[in-house]
Amino acid sequence: MLNLYNTDETCPSFTRLSFHSAVVGTGLNVRLMLYTRRNRTCAQVVNSTFLGNLNVTKKTTFVVHGFRPTGSPPVWMEDLVQGLLDVEDMNVIVVDWNRGATTVIYNHASSKTRKVAVVLKEFIDQMLVQGASLDDIYMIGVSLGAHIAGFVGKMYNGQLGRITALGYKEPLGNIDFYPNGGLDQPGCPKTILGGLRYFKCDHQRSVYLYLSSLRENCSITAYPCDSYRDYRNGKCVNCGIPPKESCPLLGKSNKQFSPCPSLTVLSPCFAVYHYFVDIITWNKNIRRGSITIKLRDKAGNITESKINHEPAVFQKYHQVSLLARFNQDLDKVATISLVFSTGSVIGPRYKLRVLRMKLRSLAHPERPQLCRYDLVLMENIETVFQPILCPKNLQL
Image (cartoon, rainbow, N blue to C red; front, side):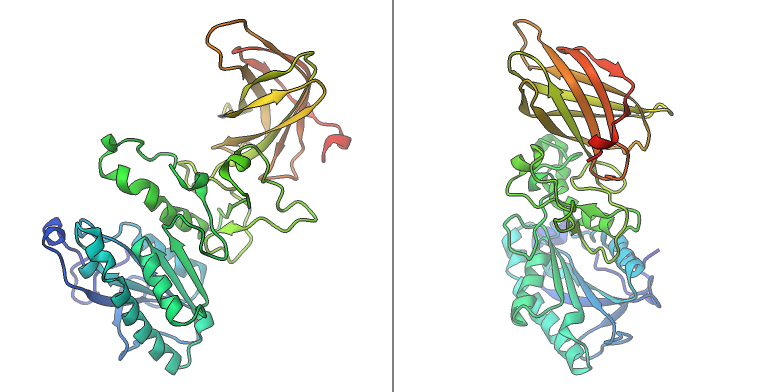
């Protein structure tokens, strides 16, 4: 176990304070705790006059936490330190400014951020004297820690190797990621009845997304887009298809792993799996409505997507491409079910006459695409069928 929080005198621990400290306020005290692959579980306290075991020829990553209204250590810190060391042989420095960040008044904590940045600059200056390069200095800032990282970057005129800011809405980076549009995150409480999680869950998700990006079996693909609405309407998922450039990956992905695409749900790698459902209809009149699609494999695993973010317009002999998002990725689909709905509570029930349906995976474009022909979907009634492989001329 990483010795961030214990009271063992031989291994410095991250400052643990109480809610009482948050109420009365705390004066600023910054401690820099160095971890390397040689001392993964026991930190070494370093400062601008003592660099300790820091190897200036290697990359150095500073991890800077944010506002701590209860005084407790960040629950994600241990996983982040270990994840970074798993990815690369580097120096990881935990910036412990809990004495200063612990307060119930946010402005009191934010007023100390520039002072923390000055401490970090003094330390980095000494690293540079010893032969370190700004290109090898990386900062990960969470919440107010992101502001601290930004202040340090400004002090070096934007010459730091990289800054990752977790917890800011406005676009300000070389690239900005907005999981689920950057608003409410799946699995987080929607009302204040969720207690403390209501205030921190959405905000903290950025940290866990970053942690997921460090895992070798889960790189998180993002799709450049002008708006979340355009994305959900399937207008922004063509990156990576030649001749376009590859899709950007969220977080610190130094290797190209098998994709675990884009927006988040509650799964081990915080990802959903994207498919296009292409439908050509032959109704004489225009039909407007939503489609719910369910996939089932031979083992009985089922995953479902309700594509209802914006009613689709089905016109005779026109293909409508719907973006479906599933929280499971079924390798071999045995059956597909479709439900068509206009959303109307009263009035007649409509039919959607499907000339052809095609299912294609965005996560694995190399997989054979699945088709079905001549379906009649009765409104609000589930239609289950076995798909067949699309002809080669449709595998595009």
